[in-house]
Image (cartoon, rainbow over all chains, first blue to last red; front, side):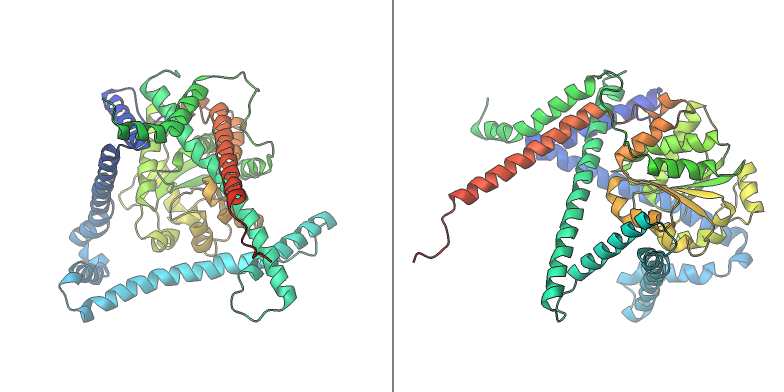
Length: 214
Length: 282
């Protein structure tokens, strides 16, 4: 009933494999580690094989090999890109001076994307959103002021090592308790979330596999 | 033959096995309609998302960014399917893309399911784009595979060929590339693009501020909101979405969790009461 498996032979086989894998993982509840460890190895092996196939089928062949073979003049930038990939692949036996700049470009590029996005997409808009707007009704304004106060108190809870007065220490303590309260509420939601995954798996076993729920 | 080890092992496993048995019974019992409801009574998030979809122009191009996590996708599966049906019912032309390998697996499975059901045309497949956030930024200018053919692909190409060609993006979150990545990387580059998201509960605290600041037009990030939305969407073959999460086993599980919490707390209190006082004797 999760809809992924069809009624044909392949779907039936997939349902059986999924059901047996679920039971193998749950055998850990009874203290039987072998089936559980076997399931872990199966998952790791399948995930690795899937990633390799995806990389070849969806990335390397259509975006690198095919353009270079069919229209090499239109994709000249792929040649140095290919050389950089070769340097990364041979990092274990090539001199460090040759491979280090490639790794640095890769890490630096990703960090720049993440940092730039965090500043422009999160910090600045959220700072603007945290400030109370003047053109709102009094009830909304009260809510926004409370939100700003909570944000300030929680931020104060993260002050470590800075010189503090008695008032700041008390405010930080209030902020810490607010933080704990928020995390507690979030954990409650998480319990519901994880429970729903267990209930879904039970429904799969009873509905799709044993067909008791149909 | 039962060795003492086996008996001890079974004794340790007894509470978990008992809980499983109780949950199985609760799953099989079907309480009467309206007796137990999982759907959230607060419909503000549901209304926001439905309004965002309702505001779409006719024959709008909508991109489904399917980057869920295999572990948590069952929590949002019914909601995601309801949203795809809702978009289809509003006449949207859908395309699907993934920026994570897990998301690609889910997207392929969902396309297969829709094609098998025959109720609707599966979303146009834009495939998997590698490079994580760098790939996301590259997709802003070019998202259609060179060899892709079809009316939806042509419509995207006519509007520029990138993410900006779409009227809205439905982000199925859960993995590393979540709605936050979209807000941070795509939002500043395409400020007029409407973004709505369906996310598992663990992402709710991270994404809620983006909804309040208006960077997201809609967000469904708890099971109860998702159930309320799926209940509200009545178009299409609802039976194909599956039965969703049953409320009775959820109630039983929550009571079991509360009982475990109470038992742990009482054991801690009893241990503290037995502990000798550390106050020095005068």
